[in-house]
Each structure stands twice: as structure tokens, then as C-alpha cells.
Image (cartoon, rainbow, N blue to C red):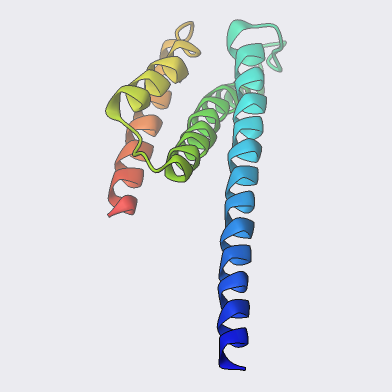
Length: 136
């Protein structure tokens, strides 16, 4: 009787581990999809395809700025989460090369507007520091 219970305990552990891996893969995919959505939003607003500031209204200009800035920051955040979760599943750490490449890719989106670029750079820098201290 005791051997049967141990066997079921092992089966439960393997099922639980398998469910955790499936959940982790789902988070990788969902984070990458959200990152892609924010990338598309960022491109539309930063290139100038879509703009909400038509008649130089101050509130609309501020709203346009925040959409540009936050879409870049959220793109960086979700793509970092997606890459980090994928690397954790494969058993490898996220390297600095990958992180620097993601920072450069994020900042290229804001190259047309200096203010958006500066705020995005500060936001990404704060996020990198936060994630660095969070991992400890």
C-alpha cells in the first residue's frame, strides 16, 4: 500500500511540473503577443501614421506623447518578460547582449522625437535597474 502512494505522489509531481511548464510557455507566448501589440502601436504613433493631436491642443499633444512613451516602455517590459521566461525554461540566463539589443530596438522606435526618446531612455533605464534588483 505504501508503494502505491509513493507512485501516485511521483505522478502528481510530474503532472504538476508539466502543468507549470505549460503555464510558463503560455506566459512566454502571451507576453510576446502583448509586446508585439505595443510594438505596432508604437510604430503607428511614432512614425506618424496615427496621431491624436490634430489642432495643436495641449491636452491632445500630452496624450499623444504619453501614448508614444508608454507604448515603447510596455513593449520593452513585455518583451523582456517573454525572453526572460523563455530563457528560464531553457535553463539559460538572459545575457547582456540580448538585453542591450532589446534596449536598442526599443529606442530606435523613438528616434524621430527627442522628448519621447529621452523619456523612453530614462524609463528603460529604470526598468532595467528594477529588474536587476528584483532578480536578487
